[in-house]
Length: 201
Length: 277
Image (cartoon, rainbow over all chains, first blue to last red; front, side, top):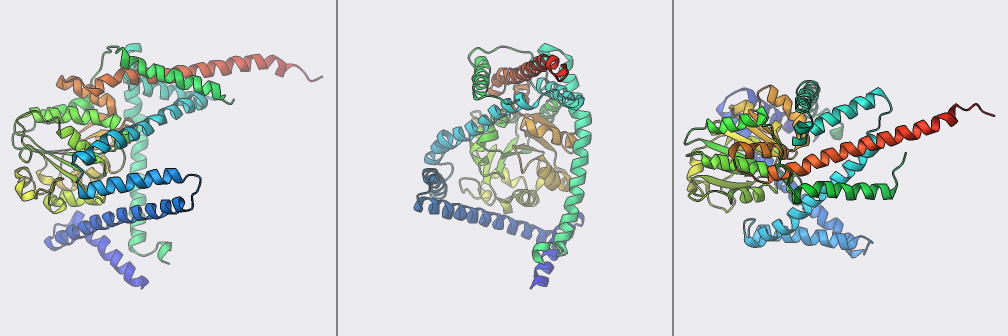
């Protein structure tokens, strides 16, 4: 059975990879079909995740665990948005009203709360103990002030220094990370395609 | 050196005041428009009548604060250009709502199906982007309302990513510009511009330097710059005062903490130097 899994994985990987390099009609059509299968599988995965979430929180409600009201709120949201989206459509006024007046403000608020953690984290961690921490603090100050208009008001050189830090040392590091992770990705893909991953062993 | 609960509360309260004050009483500040922002403006100015632009709404309510204002400003610029069609897609589940909100601001006279279309959401992330780039109508056989692609004249102009004059990827995470470069930019030669959250700017600058990205807007700051270019003030410019206040506040708090630590250390030094009895 293991050989069948490996063979399917290898064929699919080779087909999609070849499509990126070779323009052969049969390969292109097969690869397009496989990509569409991928979309269908992703949609199923979403449904499966929703089912898992439903089962978990239904269990918490039935056992009356201390946090069961939160689970009830979550299930209400899940059922409401899934039901409304499926039956009345995501552009219907009923769906849009709850999205804009419930989900959107909550999402904004939760993300905004991060700012408070950032403020206290910066207050506690940006302390000058050694030259290394001083370098981080000075760099952070230039980047922060260079990202907002007040930086230009304080000193015209701030956006230029900030831009240089982002364009030169940052990009050099980022490029290394991107190329390194891409090579790692190819290696991981090869291991999966050849059935060398331990989960199949 | 631990922070007491009262110190933390004081910092929170002062921070809220610092961020809210510019909203109540805006302080006008000069704004330098970055070259990366001008690049997107120029690219849109160079579009010809009949060109189709894809706007990809890959963000959710959490990151919308940083991105949505730029999406609206860019959309208005596109709508001002004669004969440009805009296709809205999303590979993040919340995306279609933001596409709807953006398209609702279309100027009068623009017709749905001819000038703009909202295709909605497809699951699958990068895989769905690959499928969309390869065959638009197979990936989205209908728009968000269920109207078949065959009844939307704008869609008849595009078969694959080769037919996109420009892709504008607006992302707060994954999928993002890198996925579009891999699936539409490199294989089909589509020009890709990106609007990303400010924290996503550093990794994406590498793609900008290698010219795999045609332009890059830096979050809310990018929105403010674009609003300046198109002469349409909006939430981007309105948010600059608060962002400036937040940055200055954090740096002041850090400076005060460091001075406090220095003073405390100086006071402790004489007793440390005293020889043991």
